[in-house]
Image (tube, rainbow, N blue to C red; front, side, top):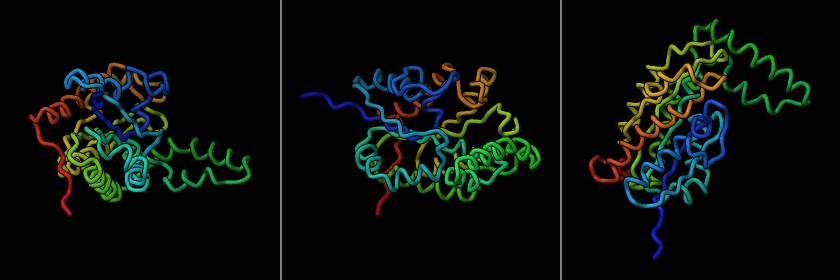
Length: 256
């Protein structure tokens, strides 16, 4: 009989497929999901099949739609997974100069010339508005993030029943677009950690790992060099492999 691969699922954002030079193909070996897969494969002695469910700018609301509404993600990817990484939240906690609903409406503006003018002016004003408000406002309000993140983790536990699991906290930035500041990061990270641990998911602080490499971020001031991808993957692997080997507890499926 052919041995079934170990199934790793990553629910993430652009940090899962972008390095310090830009977006990469899914099989790029330097990206943290693939580094993580290689570590697990070496530890468990089985081939690892990795599925990355991610797009640029994925926030917690989109993650909730994915795990609650997308039948492919629910029943063909998450169900039967051996390990799951939930790596969303970075955009939710990012400083916001423009309410998220305004950005959501821009693609629907017509004609195209109006859409381009509005987009240019909104994005141009964003860093100045962030600085004017001292970075106090974020893409997703704290209470809304807490409600949706709690729902995402509950749904992951429900679908990937008994899988090893770990959460990756929010990254920060050195970006002019976000006003070159991030005053709410640590408070929001602490909130995210508390929710994750309440669901039985160990929490890895992305920014603690990435910050020492901040002088080598992508020109956008957000995405990580290969060394940071490697170290993030190693931290995630330590938590997941311990669960796979029975050395640490796994997130438990909810009882109904």
